[in-house]
Length: 418
Image (cartoon, rainbow, N blue to C red; front, side):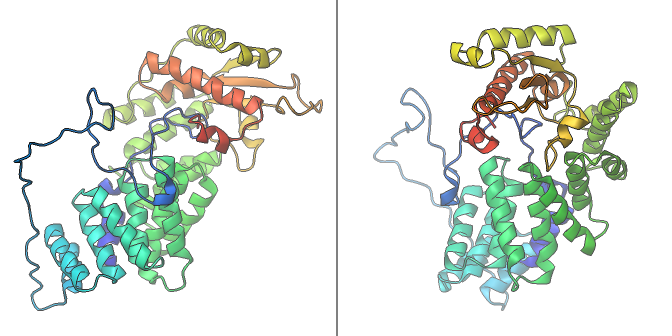
C-alpha cells in the first residue's frame, strides 16, 4: 500500500473518523455487537440470508442460473512494475486501477506481502471491506511485520468498520505492532499512532490514547484528528481544565465542531453552568443532528420511578443480593467517585457500584458499606428513546449487580454487559 496514500486518507479526510459506539460509556454499554472470534482476524462479511429458515438460511439459485463475472481491467502499468503502478494509482485516487495492478502484482508474486497489502488498501477504499480483510490477513500471514499491511489492517478495523470492542482491539494490536518495530518507516509512525489513539479511546484506555496522540502531535502539531483524540483522552482522564481548552480550540474546525460543542456542554454541566451547557448542546445538535439528538431525559422523579420498577422486575436472587444495598439516582458522577480509581473512571459512566463484593468483608471506610448509583443525565444521553432508556436502566443494574457479585469489567463484557 502506498505510504503517502494511506497517510493522506487517514489524516486529511473527515470520513476517516471511525463510527463511534452507540452508547456513550464503555463501562455499562448494553450495545455489544456479535462478531466472530478475534483469533481469526476477520469479521463475517457475507450476507447469510434471512427468512423462515433462520439466520443461516439461503436461497438456492435455479440450476440454469449463471453467475455474472466482472473481471478486473488489465493493469495499465505505463512501463512501471505492477506494484509501483498500483501505489501510484492509489495516491491519485484511482482505486479501481490500483486494484487491477495490485492484483497483477500478487498474481506474479503470490508470496509478496506488499502486493496483498496494496490489494487490501484498494479494496478498503472501494468499500469492499470483507475482501480487504482477507487481503490484509493474507499479507500478514506471509509477513506478520509488513508495516503497510499492519497500517492498512489497523485502519480498517479501528477506523473504517463500525466500532466494536473486538475490532478496536484488533486495530490497536496491529497499530501497536507497527509502532514497536524498528524497521517501520518513519513516515508511517504518525498514521499508526493516530489509529492507535482512536482505538484506545474507543476501548476506554485514555491514558494510552493520550500517549499515542502525543506521538502524532510531536511530528504534526496542527493535526486536527490528533488534537481531537488528545482532547477526548483528557476528558476521559478527568483532566477537565485541560480538556476544556483542548475542545475550545476545535470549535472552528468544521469537521469536529459538533463534538467539541458536545464535550464543552458536558464540561460546563459538571460545573453546574446549566444554561451555558445547553447552549453548547444545542450547537452540537444543530451541526450533527444524527449524532446528537435530544436525549429522552425524564424528570428526576420519573427517573427514580423507572429505577424502582426495574429493581422490582429483577430476578429474586438479584433482589436478594441487593438487600441492604441502597440504589441511588444521581444526576452525574462526582469527581471523588471518578478519581477513586486509577486510571479514573469515565465521566460518562452510566452507573457505579461502590464498596467490596459480597464475598469480601467491609472495612468500615464507607457508610453504607456497599451502594449503587445510576446517573440520570448520562443514561439519557446513551439512548435515543424512552423505551431504550428503560432497557438501559435494566442493563446497567445488571452490570452493577455483576460487580456486587465480584465480576470485573472484562467478565461482564464477555457476557454482553459491557
